[in-house]
Length: 215
Picture 1 (spheres, one colour):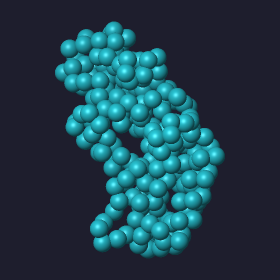
Picture 2 (cartoon, rainbow, N blue to C red; picture 1 turned 120 degrees about the vertical axis):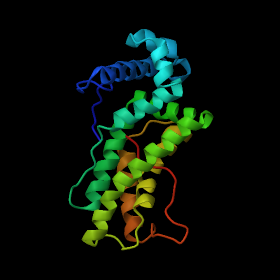
Picture 3 (cartoon, rainbow, N blue to C red; picture 1 turned 45 degrees about the horizontal axis):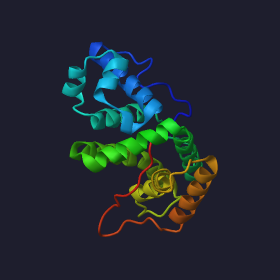
Picture 4 (tube, rainbow, N blue to C red; picture 1 turned 90 degrees about the vertical axis):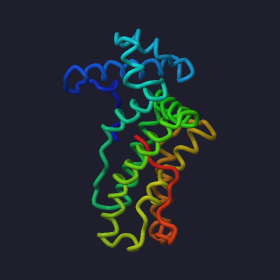
C-alpha cells in the first residue's frame, strides 16, 4: 500500500470513458475531503468534475455507487509486501494500512462506504466483493508462510488477514479515533503470535467472513 495518495485516477492512461471516470472520482475524493459523505451530492460532483449529472446517474446511480468506486480505485494502487517472512510481511502491510488511514480523508472514505452499504443493497454487495478480493489477495502472504513452514498447514489465510485488519476498523468505525503506527505494530505482532500458535486453523464450518484489511 502506498503511503502518499494522489487524487484518484491521476496519471492513469485511457480513453474518453477512463478520463470521465478519473474526473468524477477526483471530484468525489475532493468533495469528501471538503464536506464528508453527508454533504456529498451528485450535483456537487457534477459541478466540480465538469461531467453532466445525467452521466453520473447513468453510470453510478447514486452517491453510494460513487464512493464504492472511489474505494476500489484507490485500493488498486496497493501492492502487497513480500519480505521473505510472514512477520515482515505483516508489519509492512499493517504499516501501510496505518499510513493509508492516517489521513482523515481516507477515514472519511471508509466511513462513507460502510454507511452506504448499511442503506443500499448494491453498495453492500460492492463492499463484500471488494473485501473478499482483498482478503484473497492478501491471503497469498499466509499461503507463502505455510509453504515456508512458518505456520501450521491448516492455517486459514482469510482468518489471519481478517484478524490483522480488525483493529483498524474497530479504531476507525467504533471508537472513532485516528490510527497510528503503534496500532500497526501491535496488530502485526499479535496476529503473528496467534497464527504461529494455531489460532487461525480451518474448521468444519469453513473460512471466516469478518473484518478485513483495507486499502
